[in-house]
Amino acid sequence: LRAAGLPLPETNVPFGRFELDFFWRRERLAVELDTFPFHRGPDAFNRDREKDLLARDALIDLLRFTGDHVDNRPTMVVARIAGELARRAAGD
Image (cartoon, rainbow, N blue to C red; front, top):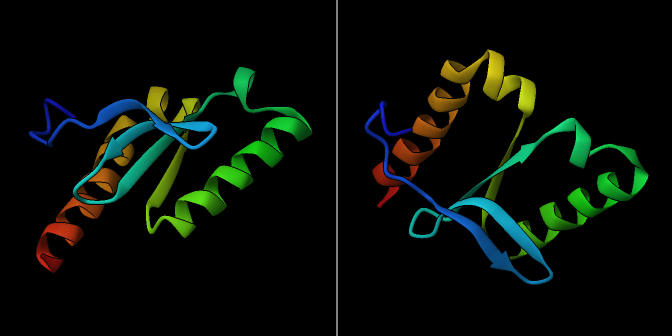
């Protein structure tokens, strides 16, 4: 994000009984990093869906990326985030 010149998000932001991994407050954009060790199994799946619904209720757009995305396709991850941030800036 720094290398792309993007604004840095807040990290590990309290959000009800959850935390948002990365949050651009003004833009109302959150990014969750779903790594396999912490997001496998039915409990994690259900917890993630609940967080998605709460974000939607709070008018926060939430993007999810896997650990594999970040490790092997970082350009795609940064491009998606940059696109979302630009879209919001254009709507201001």
